Length: 297
Image (cartoon, rainbow, N blue to C red; front, side, top):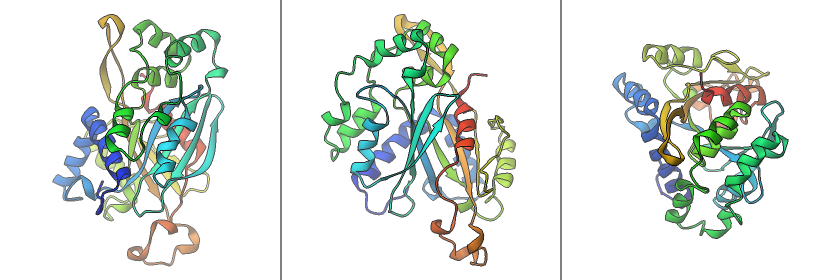
């Protein structure tokens, strides 16, 4: 992420990305290949379309808590999305500053789960007695990064993780990963003309032996045909659970977005096209399948 004058929110986003990229090998693999092929000169040349977080929809946590960090730093709350079958709720957030990534925050509707799953989740989330975001100075970079980097509840047991996995992959992911960055997103339409569509870019990814999520098709397309999205399958990480038991689980992944120009702007030369001319926001049907990038195959 390339910010000329670094504000608190810039430093927060950079720290999140550094932790995330160290944990997701596909990030550096893709970036290094883009540099090697002279598509970009370095990571900072990539425009990050959005970053996403997963949360538990329970008292003191969830969207209402986490969003405070981003609202405080100039983000504006936009559209709401509901995912009935996955029992999820989500909002996205935009920032007026150029090239700031959109924020996408989802939460699990815990009350809609089985009694067994609710009991497991509450065993951990009930350890959070008050909204933790209210306890930190949102203008202090170290405090915010510390909050986003440290667990909110105790290490789960492998038994609890697997029991949640049987009902909700999302629940199991959050109970272990907490506020790890779920994914960041490369804006392929900002790349040069040989790679600026998902069709072209995915061919590049296949040559790197990058595995893509094919749920709903490798390329997920919005109803208006203006938002196209693909994603890698999440890297597997060796997780250590309570009592030092280990297991391979899904970590985070990389997404790729192509935002096409609205038809009314089709006559504007490509070098004059700005983000305001392109499709904004998200598409529930696309996002529903993108969530499955962490499904354990």
